[in-house]
Image 1 (cartoon, rainbow, N blue to C red):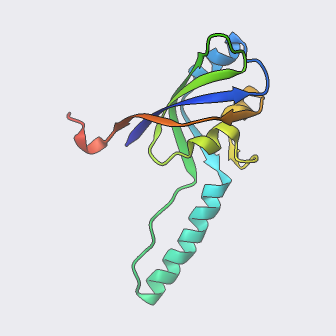
Image 2 (image 1 turned 30 degrees about the vertical axis):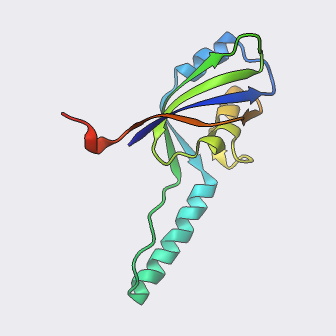
Length: 135
């Protein structure tokens, strides 16, 4: 399943046209979240314990995030506020990807651009479910 989002984002420096083009050129990027990896490890341990005790397994979790594409749209009259459009794998932690989660998510939107980035709001604009796709 894929989800599309739009989010107003603030950056600590003015982004140049080259920055916007570099973000737009990224396709199918995999970002890794240390928080998700730790979360996955804890669930793995719980899963092993549950299997040992004959209990139901807890839900699975992964530590990677897939960003299929990104595009940055300038907001007229503003040099440090932008609209970020993303298409991601369902389950991707968008807020953590944008601000980097204190360095635990790499690469992040901010680390790619070499700036601090903060997400102000997050809107889901489309959901594509594989089960409804026709061949």
